[in-house]
Length: 326
Image (cartoon, rainbow, N blue to C red):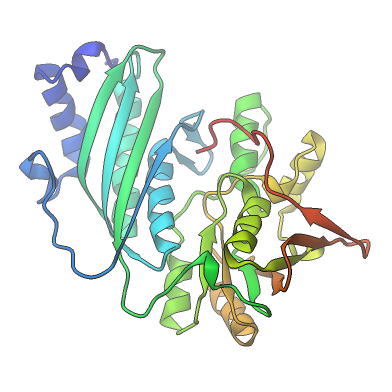
């Protein structure tokens, strides 16, 4: 069956869509009440985030728009030291979308949410004219345990920055699919909780964290430098990039510094904790390729020490790196 405008009318077709697809996979005690709003029990400090996902194609190696929409918002909560609890999901469906594809994506969202330990407790669906496209917005709430203070403003001279693994995989995967290049590059789309859990479980004093999505590493480091009023010195040879992504980037003239990721993060610790933190996350599957990439210095901006022994300024991404990557 194909989505048509009647599915967005609020009538029988809408109710059937809610019951047969969304209700089938998202059912829980809060959502199944079908009230105008979810009533939640929340105590203490919370993190709240929202994001909209417009990736094209909606299915790709390593994931789909459904998995991506859950990972993206859950990871944003994790980066504030929060323990994710609840998500909302808003869908914009274009006429002509195959309901089998929609069901596959909703099932993927449900599976990923379950793995992340979060409940989808509210949502909305709209149908518009189009050619079978699909867009998803997710918002999330997470609880921040007492004593955690994660902020880009916390950086100070001497701190060390660690990246959790190889860069550019999501960007290269999506671009390969869009222009028809055959390779074995898979998106790194995934939940970063194993890394954050390992850090906090081992009492690493994490100062700041950020998932490296749109804009890439270069942009995130500049945001850290600006927020903290410090300079960041990055080692070019320490930046982890797989051989296949490196070759792909070289052919197309892309810079892994500005390529998007959906399952990579950077975090900042004191120099004393750096080696211990690196060892801890290397024991996780998601962090096995982690590397110390930079140090925080006095000054402003981001400077890269090149493999030739020189140095150059690293600015934020200018322009559009790749449309519809998330």
